[in-house]
Image 1 (cartoon, helix red, strand yellow):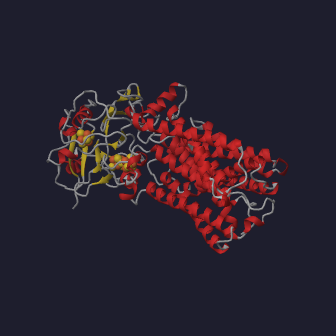
Image 2 (cartoon, rainbow over the protein chains, first blue to last red; image 1 turned 180 degrees about the horizontal axis):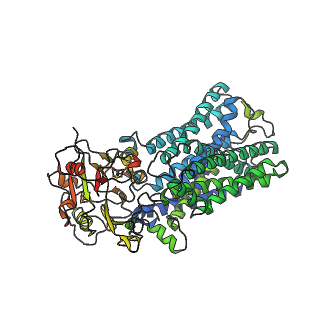
Image 3 (spheres, helix red, strand yellow; image 1 turned 30 degrees about the vertical axis):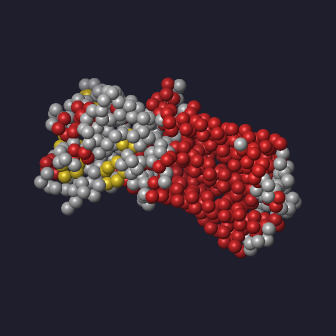
Length: 416
Length: 208
Ligand code: SF4
Ligand code: SF4
Ligand code: SF4
């Protein structure tokens, strides 16, 4: 089905990209199959009940919300990479603007998808519009995310028009500014879903908003780098090394900022002792230590690669980018599970009572001590949603004129 | 002055018999696994174990259900208003028809485990419904919790767990009416409340 749609829609000659390898088509089909498998599992989850996940009342969110946070963050990079140079009139990163925005759009769609698979009653989502409760940070996020998605699409469309001379650079610049503002807002508001909840000591911090922005910049830029390096290899792009190096340096800076925020937060939690001290122990030596140290070590490796000139080779930049995305994934795991791990009321029959966290109990029988670990079904749905993402990405590359107009490595193409 | 229904639970009288928890379970025809009200040991490592070091041991019980907060964290967080505070009596109510199952409210409520999600099609140990006919049907993939027995309040009755207590440890009434039994008890006795540092202003008082 997908292959046919792809073929039939590729008709408009003006929009037809030349690069259309067989390998890409096969990848597209595989991604579609994976996505359909994910949808089947999701239907099973809805019909059979979310009891098939490992979420329970004491760990009521799981891997879906972890990936939701991750993908909201990933969506930042592309939009910021392409809009910042336009807004501030500085040199861009060599014509990757359109691909970067497309990556952004795909990530935003995935973020929405991860919320949808987490809902118990997806058929009731219309209520979000009918009965919107405007004091709910979740409601704010849904509004901002929707606006963000629409703006990203308009922005991509405007960029394409500007290239074909049908729109002015000034208009594009204004739109870039709006898109940039939205990007910053969307990460902050996503942070507020957690950061405004006084119920969980681990989440309740004013730093969470800016920190989500820094993590988003880091993981988003890393994702753009991964896509660019891969597309460079397959010949779709030919971005000069100097642009890669520029982005890699930026990656190092973002890592430093992100780890700096982490340090500030740990000190603020740990210094007075009490429940905050428990949080620090939980991270550094407790059940979440693996994720914590992975994040720190990945960050240090990324900075070394980014700041030592002789190490800035394409392959190592790719390694640093992958590690950056993994580091932020580790961060999101810590944030979500850590929030639930320490109960506010430590009463006997709450933590050991039936049905409160049986997912966690299943995991602890395997020797772990986390309250939550995803079930096979949850992992399957996540893989399915990721398949959808790859499908969208490849479809865009096939059908949309996302290639830089000039195949040179000069920056002029991006300056508009 | 507005009405705020609440409870005063006498921990000196509570014997940890679970009768209120079971009364709630039956009255509200709760699905398997859901306990809107729990009787739990406070201090000990496990249920029914004492705290302290021998010979200075204490075994204490406390019951935990939704605190019907005057400033409920859950109400502010729900994106569709499926959980809301009733103007007329201060009960924090739950609308199963509206709930989209996002579980934002569970994340927002500081009181561990009082909000419960139906992770599957509600199952019941008995193959016929028990409890009150006016209790709304439980729904898969929605959140539920203590409603202060809203169906009984509507008929002018007290919640089921109040009358069920064999130790007469549970008292119910309007906290804002200073002549009510609960208000009087709070004035006369020493009390504590759970997690006051979270600013939710719970309406359940524990007499100590
Ligand atoms: S105890 Fe929790 S669920 Fe009940 S009203 Fe307070 S915040 Fe809401
Ligand atoms: S789970 Fe239901 S009651 Fe709770 S916040 Fe979501 S919609 Fe509201
Ligand atoms: S008031 Fe009713 S619903 Fe609430 S704990 Fe008591 S019996 Fe259960």
